[in-house]
Image 1: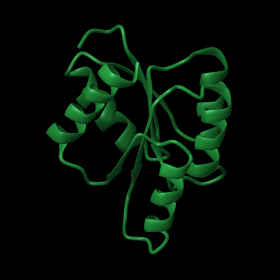
Image 2: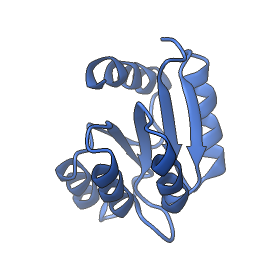
Image 3: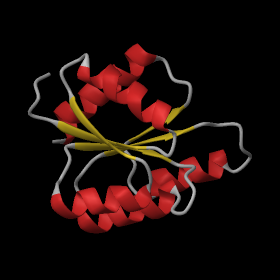
Image 4: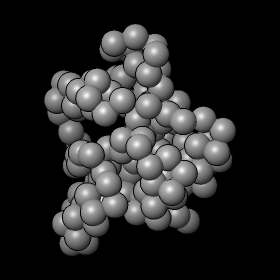
Length: 127
């Protein structure tokens, strides 16, 4: 994987953003971060990432609302949704994310090798 692809990670937890960014960049995937749905929207107004990794549970603007904005602005950009799990609404939210076009769904904590392989596969097949 080369730095031709740009992945945007959207998560309100800075530690998760840093962890995913470092993980992907170790595999040659250029990664930028947004700490909420509003920052994501600002970024996608000016850039079209190759892939967006989106947290479902964020304050101010949740992942589903952010996913709808992503789909309106960049309908062909693949989105991988991640969630911390543990909430009763997760099953419904994950189904809702799939309905709005999420390519893949992951529950945190996820297995790093599987996650990276899925990101690489999505970058190869979705773009």
